[in-house]
Length: 224
Image (cartoon, rainbow, N blue to C red; front, side, top):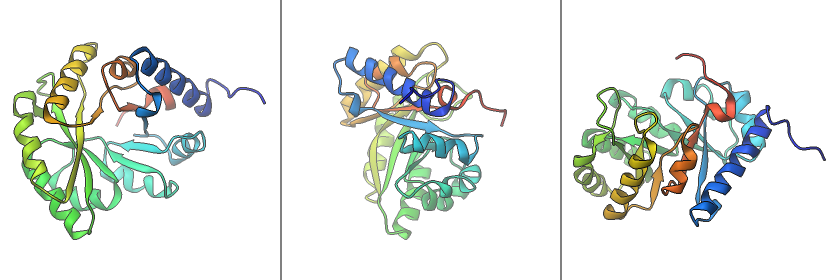
């Protein structure tokens, strides 16, 4: 049987998995401890289904409205993550659609998610998003305020706090990944969602348990 085309989605999935495995082994970690989260923003359902057929089971979208028109078309065992900012008026829709919300960055949002999860009779997995670079253009709780937000989320039984998520300044990933790993350990949080197409190997070497890969799997995205 011939190897998959490296330029097609199955070939790209295989290539990314090989790089994940190598990065994990370099840092003495089990490659199975790292989840490949395919970011399908602006890409059609067909691309997501191709990734699913190649073995990917976790998918990320940035916007609730776009996800509503796409993610229900995935098989039922696909795990759906929201990885973009969430407005309070879209919380109920997000809780109905997503299996995990990675972008909790304020207590008000956490309370609304908890209320919606209770109404849906579910316990909702979440991550706290940290603005590790202090960038005004990015969402996320400031690093200095992370511990307080983590404690607030932990007081909400309808939320299952899994870990921390960050998007560091471009080209500055490693020190931010290392700092987030240390912060998560101090807070007793086991998961780290960090690293994207350009820096996921560094993120894995610094402890990432979830890497969010879009363009390396599906090609450069259109604007939007």
